[in-house]
Length: 325
Image (cartoon, rainbow, N blue to C red; front, side, top):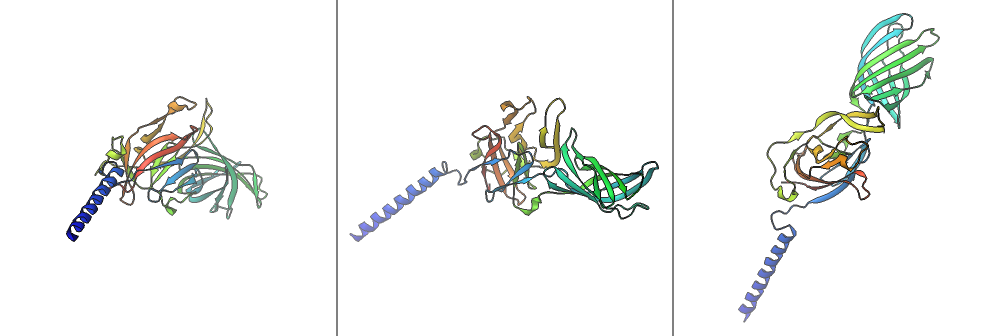
Protein backbone atom coordinates (compact mmCIF):
# COMPACT_ATOMS: atom_id res chain seq x y z
CA UNK A 1 0.00 0.00 0.00
CA UNK A 2 2.79 2.39 0.90
CA UNK A 3 4.44 1.68 -2.47
CA UNK A 4 1.25 2.75 -4.30
CA UNK A 5 1.14 6.05 -2.36
CA UNK A 6 4.83 6.63 -3.18
CA UNK A 7 4.29 6.02 -6.92
CA UNK A 8 1.25 8.33 -6.94
CA UNK A 9 3.26 11.09 -5.28
CA UNK A 10 6.10 10.75 -7.78
CA UNK A 11 3.67 10.96 -10.72
CA UNK A 12 2.10 14.10 -9.23
CA UNK A 13 5.48 15.84 -8.78
CA UNK A 14 6.56 14.92 -12.32
CA UNK A 15 3.31 16.29 -13.76
CA UNK A 16 3.71 19.60 -11.93
CA UNK A 17 7.30 19.92 -13.13
CA UNK A 18 6.26 19.28 -16.73
CA UNK A 19 3.43 21.85 -16.71
CA UNK A 20 5.63 24.39 -14.96
CA UNK A 21 8.31 24.06 -17.65
CA UNK A 22 5.72 24.50 -20.41
CA UNK A 23 4.35 27.61 -18.70
CA UNK A 24 7.82 29.23 -18.53
CA UNK A 25 8.38 28.57 -22.24
CA UNK A 26 5.07 30.20 -23.11
CA UNK A 27 6.01 33.35 -21.16
CA UNK A 28 9.20 33.66 -23.18
CA UNK A 29 7.42 33.62 -26.52
CA UNK A 30 7.67 29.99 -27.48
CA UNK A 31 10.84 28.97 -25.69
CA UNK A 32 13.36 30.19 -28.29
CA UNK A 33 14.95 32.73 -25.92
CA UNK A 34 14.89 33.86 -22.31
CA UNK A 35 15.76 37.51 -23.12
CA UNK A 36 13.65 40.43 -21.97
CA UNK A 37 12.75 43.17 -24.42
CA UNK A 38 12.52 46.51 -22.63
CA UNK A 39 10.94 49.72 -23.90
CA UNK A 40 11.75 53.33 -23.07
CA UNK A 41 10.79 56.81 -24.27
CA UNK A 42 13.27 59.67 -23.89
CA UNK A 43 12.64 63.40 -24.24
CA UNK A 44 15.27 64.47 -26.76
CA UNK A 45 13.38 67.55 -27.95
CA UNK A 46 15.99 70.13 -26.85
CA UNK A 47 18.40 71.23 -29.56
CA UNK A 48 20.95 72.40 -26.98
CA UNK A 49 21.16 69.11 -25.04
CA UNK A 50 22.18 65.49 -25.43
CA UNK A 51 20.00 62.94 -23.64
CA UNK A 52 22.33 60.19 -22.37
CA UNK A 53 21.10 56.66 -21.67
CA UNK A 54 22.65 53.65 -19.93
CA UNK A 55 21.50 50.19 -20.99
CA UNK A 56 22.83 48.71 -17.77
CA UNK A 57 20.65 50.62 -15.31
CA UNK A 58 18.04 52.02 -17.70
CA UNK A 59 18.66 55.57 -16.51
CA UNK A 60 18.90 58.74 -18.57
CA UNK A 61 20.27 62.22 -17.95
CA UNK A 62 20.35 65.38 -20.08
CA UNK A 63 23.35 67.70 -20.37
CA UNK A 64 23.77 70.96 -22.28
CA UNK A 65 25.96 71.13 -25.39
CA UNK A 66 28.66 73.79 -25.32
CA UNK A 67 29.32 75.46 -28.73
CA UNK A 68 32.11 77.93 -27.87
CA UNK A 69 33.49 77.78 -24.34
CA UNK A 70 36.82 76.07 -23.83
CA UNK A 71 40.57 76.56 -24.12
CA UNK A 72 42.04 77.59 -27.46
CA UNK A 73 45.64 77.87 -28.62
CA UNK A 74 46.55 80.30 -31.35
CA UNK A 75 48.44 83.31 -32.61
CA UNK A 76 47.90 87.04 -32.31
CA UNK A 77 48.91 89.87 -34.56
CA UNK A 78 49.17 93.39 -33.17
CA UNK A 79 48.29 96.52 -35.09
CA UNK A 80 48.69 100.04 -33.71
CA UNK A 81 46.50 102.73 -35.21
CA UNK A 82 48.63 104.97 -37.36
CA UNK A 83 51.67 102.72 -37.11
CA UNK A 84 50.55 99.56 -38.90
CA UNK A 85 51.32 95.98 -38.01
CA UNK A 86 53.79 95.43 -35.20
CA UNK A 87 54.26 91.67 -35.61
CA UNK A 88 52.85 88.43 -34.22
CA UNK A 89 53.08 86.26 -31.14
CA UNK A 90 52.48 82.48 -31.35
CA UNK A 91 51.02 79.78 -29.12
CA UNK A 92 48.91 81.86 -26.77
CA UNK A 93 46.08 80.33 -24.76
CA UNK A 94 42.63 81.90 -24.88
CA UNK A 95 40.13 80.73 -22.26
CA UNK A 96 36.44 81.23 -23.08
CA UNK A 97 33.99 80.64 -20.23
CA UNK A 98 30.21 80.60 -20.28
CA UNK A 99 28.60 82.78 -17.63
CA UNK A 100 24.92 82.08 -18.25
CA UNK A 101 22.61 81.84 -21.22
CA UNK A 102 24.24 83.51 -24.24
CA UNK A 103 26.76 85.41 -22.14
CA UNK A 104 30.45 84.45 -22.37
CA UNK A 105 33.70 85.85 -21.07
CA UNK A 106 37.23 85.48 -22.43
CA UNK A 107 40.71 85.81 -20.95
CA UNK A 108 43.95 86.22 -22.89
CA UNK A 109 46.32 86.28 -19.93
CA UNK A 110 49.64 85.77 -21.70
CA UNK A 111 49.56 88.90 -23.82
CA UNK A 112 53.13 90.25 -23.75
CA UNK A 113 54.32 92.19 -26.77
CA UNK A 114 57.31 94.55 -26.91
CA UNK A 115 56.61 97.47 -24.58
CA UNK A 116 53.02 96.26 -24.15
CA UNK A 117 53.61 93.80 -21.33
CA UNK A 118 51.55 92.21 -18.61
CA UNK A 119 48.27 93.22 -20.21
CA UNK A 120 45.61 90.67 -19.28
CA UNK A 121 42.86 91.05 -21.84
CA UNK A 122 39.56 90.05 -20.31
CA UNK A 123 36.05 90.97 -21.35
CA UNK A 124 32.59 89.58 -21.97
CA UNK A 125 30.55 89.08 -25.08
CA UNK A 126 27.32 87.54 -26.28
CA UNK A 127 27.07 84.61 -28.66
CA UNK A 128 24.46 84.34 -31.41
CA UNK A 129 23.96 81.88 -34.26
CA UNK A 130 25.05 83.05 -37.70
CA UNK A 131 24.94 81.70 -41.24
CA UNK A 132 28.28 79.89 -40.90
CA UNK A 133 28.73 79.50 -37.16
CA UNK A 134 28.47 81.79 -34.17
CA UNK A 135 28.94 85.53 -33.90
CA UNK A 136 30.62 86.98 -30.82
CA UNK A 137 29.73 90.56 -29.99
CA UNK A 138 30.55 92.63 -26.94
CA UNK A 139 30.19 96.20 -25.82
CA UNK A 140 33.04 98.42 -24.66
CA UNK A 141 34.44 97.23 -21.33
CA UNK A 142 36.76 99.10 -18.98
CA UNK A 143 39.15 96.79 -17.13
CA UNK A 144 41.51 98.71 -14.86
CA UNK A 145 43.04 101.36 -17.09
CA UNK A 146 42.30 99.46 -20.31
CA UNK A 147 39.30 100.02 -22.56
CA UNK A 148 38.40 96.80 -24.43
CA UNK A 149 35.99 96.20 -27.30
CA UNK A 150 35.80 92.56 -28.49
CA UNK A 151 34.09 90.99 -31.49
CA UNK A 152 34.58 87.84 -33.50
CA UNK A 153 33.17 84.47 -34.46
CA UNK A 154 33.40 80.73 -33.79
CA UNK A 155 33.14 78.24 -36.62
CA UNK A 156 33.56 74.60 -35.65
CA UNK A 157 36.75 74.35 -33.60
CA UNK A 158 38.14 77.67 -34.82
CA UNK A 159 37.84 81.06 -33.14
CA UNK A 160 38.63 84.46 -34.60
CA UNK A 161 38.61 87.37 -32.22
CA UNK A 162 39.39 91.04 -32.80
CA UNK A 163 40.11 92.88 -29.56
CA UNK A 164 40.42 96.64 -29.75
CA UNK A 165 42.16 98.04 -26.67
CA UNK A 166 43.47 101.37 -25.46
CA UNK A 167 45.78 100.98 -22.46
CA UNK A 168 45.97 103.96 -20.08
CA UNK A 169 46.14 107.36 -21.72
CA UNK A 170 47.47 106.15 -25.07
CA UNK A 171 46.12 108.28 -27.94
CA UNK A 172 45.85 105.32 -30.32
CA UNK A 173 44.21 101.91 -30.30
CA UNK A 174 45.95 98.55 -30.13
CA UNK A 175 44.10 96.06 -32.29
CA UNK A 176 44.80 92.47 -31.28
CA UNK A 177 43.66 89.82 -33.78
CA UNK A 178 43.56 86.33 -32.30
CA UNK A 179 43.10 83.17 -34.39
CA UNK A 180 43.03 79.90 -32.49
CA UNK A 181 42.04 76.26 -32.52
CA UNK A 182 40.08 74.51 -29.79
CA UNK A 183 42.17 72.29 -27.50
CA UNK A 184 39.68 71.48 -24.74
CA UNK A 185 35.96 72.15 -25.02
CA UNK A 186 34.09 73.38 -21.98
CA UNK A 187 30.83 71.96 -20.69
CA UNK A 188 29.98 68.46 -19.51
CA UNK A 189 32.69 65.84 -18.99
CA UNK A 190 31.19 62.77 -20.69
CA UNK A 191 33.62 60.49 -18.85
CA UNK A 192 32.20 61.49 -15.46
CA UNK A 193 29.06 59.33 -15.69
CA UNK A 194 27.92 56.03 -17.21
CA UNK A 195 26.17 56.06 -20.59
CA UNK A 196 26.00 53.96 -23.74
CA UNK A 197 24.04 56.02 -26.27
CA UNK A 198 22.90 59.62 -26.45
CA UNK A 199 19.99 61.16 -28.38
CA UNK A 200 19.67 64.67 -29.80
CA UNK A 201 16.41 65.25 -31.65
CA UNK A 202 17.01 62.74 -34.48
CA UNK A 203 20.77 62.29 -33.89
CA UNK A 204 22.32 59.32 -32.11
CA UNK A 205 25.85 58.74 -30.84
CA UNK A 206 27.56 56.03 -28.79
CA UNK A 207 30.08 56.11 -25.97
CA UNK A 208 33.08 54.80 -27.93
CA UNK A 209 30.87 52.08 -29.36
CA UNK A 210 29.89 50.96 -32.87
CA UNK A 211 26.74 49.70 -34.55
CA UNK A 212 25.41 47.72 -37.48
CA UNK A 213 22.09 47.33 -39.28
CA UNK A 214 20.82 43.75 -39.05
CA UNK A 215 18.35 44.27 -41.96
CA UNK A 216 15.75 42.61 -39.73
CA UNK A 217 12.58 44.38 -38.52
CA UNK A 218 11.59 41.97 -35.72
CA UNK A 219 13.82 42.36 -32.65
CA UNK A 220 13.00 38.84 -31.43
CA UNK A 221 14.29 37.32 -34.65
CA UNK A 222 17.80 38.70 -34.16
CA UNK A 223 19.14 35.84 -32.08
CA UNK A 224 22.91 35.86 -32.67
CA UNK A 225 25.53 38.57 -32.28
CA UNK A 226 27.05 39.48 -35.68
CA UNK A 227 30.81 38.99 -35.74
CA UNK A 228 31.71 41.94 -37.97
CA UNK A 229 30.38 44.95 -39.86
CA UNK A 230 30.20 47.43 -37.00
CA UNK A 231 30.58 51.14 -37.77
CA UNK A 232 32.10 53.55 -35.25
CA UNK A 233 30.95 57.13 -34.65
CA UNK A 234 32.30 59.87 -36.89
CA UNK A 235 32.85 63.56 -36.31
CA UNK A 236 30.36 66.06 -37.68
CA UNK A 237 30.41 69.85 -37.82
CA UNK A 238 26.66 69.97 -38.46
CA UNK A 239 25.00 69.21 -35.14
CA UNK A 240 22.12 71.69 -35.08
CA UNK A 241 22.22 73.54 -31.77
CA UNK A 242 20.23 76.76 -32.21
CA UNK A 243 17.24 77.16 -34.53
CA UNK A 244 16.07 80.60 -33.37
CA UNK A 245 17.22 82.15 -36.65
CA UNK A 246 15.79 79.53 -38.99
CA UNK A 247 13.66 82.05 -40.88
CA UNK A 248 14.07 82.13 -44.64
CA UNK A 249 15.51 83.40 -46.97
CA UNK A 250 18.76 83.72 -44.95
CA UNK A 251 18.60 81.18 -42.14
CA UNK A 252 20.95 81.62 -39.21
CA UNK A 253 21.26 78.23 -37.55
CA UNK A 254 23.83 77.55 -34.88
CA UNK A 255 25.84 74.39 -35.55
CA UNK A 256 28.51 72.81 -33.39
CA UNK A 257 31.03 69.98 -33.82
CA UNK A 258 30.19 66.65 -32.25
CA UNK A 259 30.10 62.94 -33.02
CA UNK A 260 27.26 60.78 -34.27
CA UNK A 261 26.75 57.25 -35.50
CA UNK A 262 25.70 57.21 -39.13
CA UNK A 263 24.19 53.72 -38.83
CA UNK A 264 21.99 54.51 -35.83
CA UNK A 265 21.06 57.88 -37.31
CA UNK A 266 19.17 56.01 -40.01
CA UNK A 267 16.83 54.64 -37.33
CA UNK A 268 15.16 58.05 -37.23
CA UNK A 269 15.81 60.38 -40.14
CA UNK A 270 14.87 64.01 -40.62
CA UNK A 271 14.71 65.75 -43.98
CA UNK A 272 15.07 69.51 -44.44
CA UNK A 273 12.38 69.36 -47.14
CA UNK A 274 9.62 70.47 -46.81
CA UNK A 275 10.04 73.52 -44.59
CA UNK A 276 8.62 74.36 -42.16
CA UNK A 277 8.77 70.79 -40.85
CA UNK A 278 5.73 68.54 -41.10
CA UNK A 279 5.18 64.86 -40.42
CA UNK A 280 6.66 64.21 -43.87
CA UNK A 281 10.07 65.39 -42.63
CA UNK A 282 10.37 62.40 -40.31
CA UNK A 283 10.86 58.78 -41.30
CA UNK A 284 11.82 55.58 -39.52
CA UNK A 285 13.77 52.63 -40.84
CA UNK A 286 12.01 50.07 -38.59
CA UNK A 287 15.27 48.12 -38.59
CA UNK A 288 16.92 46.37 -35.66
CA UNK A 289 20.46 47.50 -34.84
CA UNK A 290 23.15 45.80 -32.78
CA UNK A 291 25.46 48.03 -30.77
CA UNK A 292 28.90 46.93 -29.62
CA UNK A 293 29.51 48.81 -26.38
CA UNK A 294 32.80 50.18 -25.10
CA UNK A 295 32.77 47.42 -22.47
CA UNK A 296 32.76 44.74 -25.18
CA UNK A 297 29.14 43.82 -24.41
CA UNK A 298 26.33 44.05 -26.94
CA UNK A 299 22.82 45.47 -27.05
CA UNK A 300 20.18 45.31 -29.76
CA UNK A 301 17.79 48.18 -30.34
CA UNK A 302 14.85 49.16 -32.52
CA UNK A 303 13.52 52.72 -32.70
CA UNK A 304 9.73 52.57 -32.60
CA UNK A 305 8.46 56.18 -32.49
CA UNK A 306 9.68 59.77 -32.72
CA UNK A 307 6.81 61.67 -31.05
CA UNK A 308 4.72 61.54 -27.89
CA UNK A 309 0.95 61.26 -27.57
CA UNK A 310 0.63 64.99 -28.29
CA UNK A 311 2.62 64.49 -31.54
CA UNK A 312 5.58 66.52 -30.25
CA UNK A 313 8.60 65.41 -32.28
CA UNK A 314 11.84 64.50 -30.53
CA UNK A 315 10.30 62.13 -27.96
CA UNK A 316 12.17 59.01 -29.05
CA UNK A 317 10.87 55.54 -28.16
CA UNK A 318 12.85 52.35 -28.64
CA UNK A 319 12.88 48.69 -27.68
CA UNK A 320 16.13 47.14 -26.54
CA UNK A 321 17.73 44.00 -25.19
CA UNK A 322 20.76 44.20 -22.93
CA UNK A 323 22.94 42.29 -22.55
CA UNK A 324 22.51 40.67 -25.95
CA UNK A 325 24.45 37.42 -26.16
